[in-house]
Amino acid sequence: MKTIAIINTQSPFNTPAGRDSLDLALIFGAFEQPVTVIFLGDGVYQLLDGQNPEAIDTKDYLSTMKAFELYDIEHIVCGLDDMKNRGISVNKLSMPVEALPNAQIGELLNTFDHVITM
Amino acid sequence: MASFLILVHSSNYACQSSRSALKYAESVVNNGHDLKAIFFYQEGVCHANTLSSIPTDELDTTTGFKQLNADHNIPLLLCVTAADKRGIIDDQQALEQAQELKQAHGNVDPAFTIAGLGEMATIAAVTDRLVQFK
Amino acid sequence: MIEFDSKSYDTDKHGYLLKLDDWNEALAEHIAGLENITLSDNHWEVVHFVRNFYQEYKTSPAIRMLVKAMAKQLGADKGNSMYLYKLFPKGPAKQATRIAGLPKPAKCI
Image (cartoon, rainbow over all chains, first blue to last red; front, side):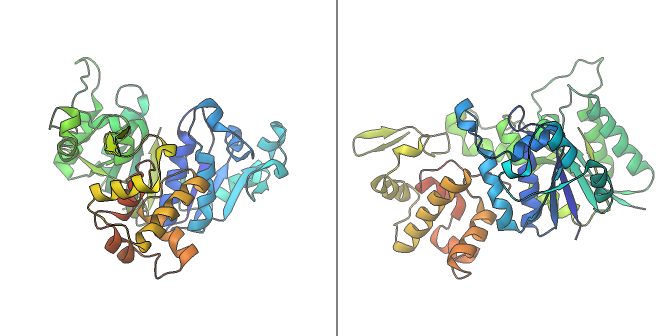
């Protein structure tokens, strides 16, 4: 067994990074490896509630993030500084998220066996 | 000795990271470590496309990866979903779609194997180090 | 393309309906016939389940996801791959989503 951190750094719809990253999180979940999903930088925009991707003819993969709970992926973390810099407060997010000061996330990353950045 | 899994995220022509991945993989093997597999995800699956041609004065990293496979049996695995989206299919898939495609041959280089994220996750679960090249 | 009841329905190259709204139960019976399946109540339960799943999660469930989600909602008797393969021998996720008029699920999740 390996503990896995998956870091999302990109805004949700410019590239397929967020979607491909979600597939990674779900597959590790399916194989019962403990997964923590982390949102940093523009990646925090993936967490904003109430987005309507269909309006720009884009697949709504954000709704698929609800499947985290099916795989017992419960530890979702975001960078508090990144949120503040973008004027986003925790109550605007689509799911329960632990907002940690970015400096603390550096320490957190040391605790995982594998870290994947998308 | 440590075990490694390498993830390649970018194509064979657009990015220095493909070359870095190859150099890194060669070093892992040459230093006596256990390279479990190289997994090609996202644009990385383009490495396996036999229909692409690289000018002779540019480094063709696919040749290097194939050499690793031939000399050291390093599995070169492709994400099937990423490959499907980019028109990279093996002979079996081509046969299944032969009527639509009007051809019965795939374009995956035989050194590469169509796999899935499942295989990648299974290997990652028993590997010391996972290294990404983007 | 699927021809049924003197109408034609657009599909992708794997025979999955292009438009979610084209779907109805009679068409589902017809697609099931193309898969050599006669729909029983147990089949219908799965077909409706994957359609509802799509509404909520916006993705066609692949097999592992289908098993997990079914186990959670309907219990382990139905949320296991043996039960599902008995109903849909050529791949529960593949066949149930096609019959339910959904996009083909990803192969690797």
